[in-house]
Amino acid sequence: MKNYKQFLFLLVAAVSVGFVSIVFVLRWVLYFKEGLAWDGGLAEFNWHPVLIVTGFIFIQGIAIVVYRLPWTWKCSKLMMKLIHAGLNILAFIFAVISLIAVFDFHNAADIPNMYSLHSWVGLAAVILYGLQIALGLCVYLVPIIPGSLRQTFMPLHVYSGLFIFGSVITTALMGITEKLIFGLKNPKYKDSPPEATFVNVLGVLIVLFGALILWIVTRPSWKRPSEQLLRSAQGNGGDASSAKGGVMLSACRSADQDDPEANCEARKRNCKPDESGQRSTM
Amino acid sequence: MKNYKQFLFLLVAAVSVGFVSIVFVLRWVLYFKEGLAWDGGLAEFNWHPVLIVTGFIFIQGIAIVVYRLPWTWKCSKLMMKLIHAGLNILAFIFAVISLIAVFDFHNAADIPNMYSLHSWVGLAAVILYGLQIALGLCVYLVPIIPGSLRQTFMPLHVYSGLFIFGSVITTALMGITEKLIFGLKNPKYKDSPPEATFVNVLGVLIVLFGALILWIVTRPSWKRPSEQLLRSAQGNGGDASSAKGGVMLSACRSADQDDPEANCEARKRNCKPDESGQRSTM
Image (cartoon, rainbow over all chains, first blue to last red; front, side, top):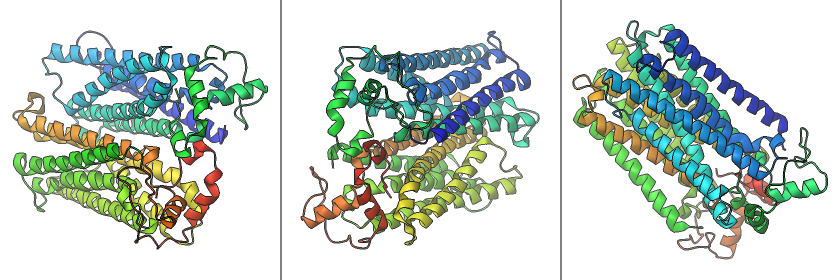
């Protein structure tokens, strides 16, 4: 891998910022707010930010970059697909439970549902995320799907994945804005009490996490190498990463020896350089 | 250009959605709110959303895709750089005036400045945008800067440009949320009066505009061809787009005949396919 140290630094930074965001959201609801419960009240609402930050932002972010971790390149592509899909499904479950918490709270408190821009964009993001996962499972995990279709669908799959991730962060920032306006009465949000500043910092951390994940995932040189390249390196007992911190290819890659995408990739090795930026990362 | 009709359809869709967004924000402030004035009151505040949507979102979006318009490929790279920089500077001026309007309004109404997450992310976006423009001017328009430095800086320039664009849209959606909560009293935002629904739709239109611009600008096959390719097509009296709707290369490209980036690009034509995704689009 080219610039392996830089990759590692940014990955550690992203995971650290994501982890600190989770600590921040927990401190917000446990220290500044009403804690966590499932009682239809404000403590049930508090599951909403906790599950969104933990699942829909942090776990989704990790799912996005999981193919880029060079120590996974020795694993079969099928296994990586299952990890990628599994993390996204987990994030989706977190998001759905977080929605149930809000609807429960709204219904108990007689607050209308779905009136705000936050709710519109947020629900659209959850629905699109569900569709993205369902389509991803069909196209990339159903064995009869031809490699050419997988290749054709990949640019849309990658784009919509990143777009949904960005939309979730946008929605979270709108949600923080709403909650600080509605939740702070005396002193108000505009008086900058400690909770306001603390949660603003949480918002900034979420933006930073998104920025790091998006930078890592859009560097072409940090892509998982093509299956053909990995296999030839494996055949030579070689090091596919061809740089410091590289990964010795070894045992666990065998499940996708006849993966149609790999064959399709091999046929496409003479493609135009500009097009290759869209090679499958899934 | 590959898939020229698809490109044209998406470009027209983006411009239309952007144009409708401007109409929406004007209708919001002129019909639902207090109109426009420069009096320190709410009518001065209203310049803020108008200038942000018109300048910081719409004009910036057009600046981002301007290199991709195939009918500009006959123009010199220097001219396109000046157009790209000019549009971004115009958007920056709009953003700065829109900030002055808010600070004026806040100071006149004795509302604290810079307390909200919206203001934090928004001000950071304006400052980063200013830095992005200043650095872009230095690196890409100062003639003594070597082509290799321009190439090295390009991935960061492209990434930060798109990241700032996304951050501005995020900030706009937070701003809409704030304004609808603070501005709607009887009926409130949660009662979904016509203004609330109308401005929520404006938010969705802004997201859609962003989605279209980001899709257009991240398709590798819609990049402006390298200068070498354009020159050889020009030399042959040929058609660089090699597809329907292509552009006959002609007169106005001459200013950058000895552009160091073009030479550097030529040297890099043997680069690895995955790296070529980062070729200069500026």
